[in-house]
Image (cartoon, rainbow, N blue to C red):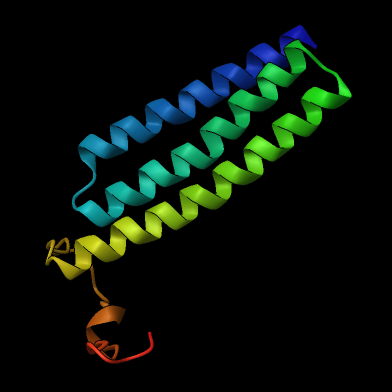
Length: 114
């Protein structure tokens, strides 16, 4: 199990490294948010599973599963919140972006329920 744990930890580190490269190289804030939230979700999951392989037990498995579920949920919500905030303050889209779905959406007013 030690070898499997080491491989999972190294894969998690590689995913974080790829996310860091994406943070520097991608063209706009939206692509960067996507890279970081994906790296967070996958990278942390791999690191936690790797740590579980080093110390396997039923209680550690439950803790690892709970940590992964919470991380995936909060990473997705946080990424969406950051993307929406960036759009609402007018962060520019990359010239390569060909479709802007939010531009055609109805803008919420001060008294709307959404």
